[in-house]
Each structure stands twice: as structure tokens, then as C-alpha cells.
Image (cartoon, rainbow, N blue to C red):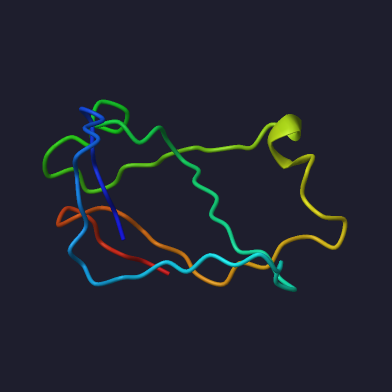
Length: 90
């Protein structure tokens, strides 16, 4: 799910049908997300029209990963986000 509320309006509602449930008991595993590559603003990544290649160099500073568990993290999904402009390559 991807929301964009740039004006930070408080009266926005979701009609996707997705429901969120909260509980008092912690689960065995935590799930979160990690975004990297660029800022998520429209000006942060301006790919020139009809560019055959566009490379984004990204890195994590030590303080960004210092709270990772010693056993590491498990990536269960990735999401290349390019709207209609991207070509997905493995």
C-alpha cells in the first residue's frame, strides 16, 4: 500500500478494505520496512526522459544499521518502485 499525503491533511480516509488489528501480546517475529536509495520526494530522483540507464548509488551509515540484531535481518520481499517508467532487471 502506498499513500501520498503531501499536504498532511488529517481528514483522509482509506477505502482499500485492508484492516489493521492491534493486540497487547508481542509476536515472536517483528516485521518492518527499510527504504534506501533516495529520498521519497518528487525532486529527489528525477530520471531524465528516455534514459537507457540511470544508476542510483546508495549506502547505509554505521548508525543506520547499529540496531540490527546480531543474527542479522531476513529480507522477505522487495519492491522496485518506478511507476510506469521502470524496467525490472534481475
